[in-house]
Image (cartoon, rainbow, N blue to C red):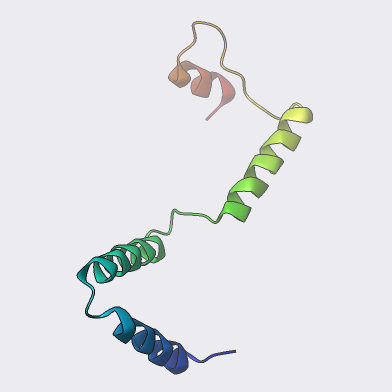
Length: 84
């Protein structure tokens, strides 16, 4: 297992190999910003967490623990009816 210092050193060694290529550096910067944004946004979940949530919802549906939107009913009306 690498330490953070070792990971940083390896990252900078790897970056030095593409430092003279503006196109590759822009791709790296774009990806690094995307990674940083996911760390900052606590509302994002992993694919595994998302899939587990769908599985739980499907199980609740099978057990009848769900609220259905009736024909011609607004979401607000459905929420009031169901106690939300």
